Image (cartoon, rainbow, N blue to C red; front, side, top):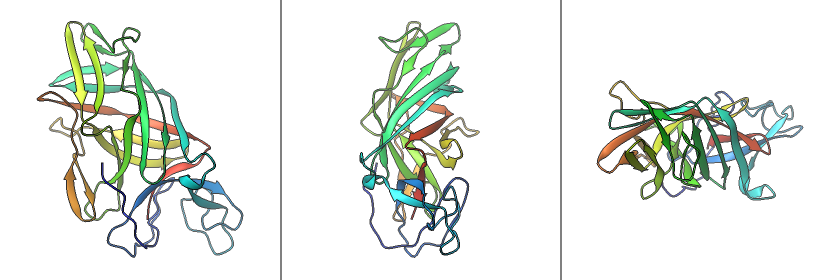
Length: 247
């Protein structure tokens, strides 16, 4: 993950849909922020669009100014995911997640996959119920830019030097390290993060941009064997209204 940049710029907002205002800086920054109800605020309800002066119904608020200094996020029941290691697919029928968003672009997330099987074998993290794979607790979560123009936001889950998850499928043991890079958008029900693979069966996004420079994400792997993650994580926040924004 990278260090955050600080610069004076106008907002380029990606909020509950799409909205943009041209940036005055060649090096925009990215942050998790809260969209709160405020009469006369800068934005229309949901912070998706700038409002006419004095007519707004919402405002963006930095998480570090929120009373607890962090925002809790959780997914109570997802539709599952697929982890592929060296061509071997581990399919999980459901998943849950919990974590927190901190100041600026960072946070942590722990994901639990259930109903996980590879062929006839259930895949399980030690100490968990059969068919349950758990990521290591508090995997790093960070906003990144997915394009050279630094206008499209994405998310990395886990990072170099971190173990993502360990599990066994029958007699085979796997320890995944590195992370996955996916897309992010602000939806009505929360923050939607999507991890996908391309036609070459590689993670759809493998690089991100910071201050005009391209960086490679340390992809999921088990030793020298590459791995991928496919699935959607929809995070609801407490308080409501957290989202991914670029400025």
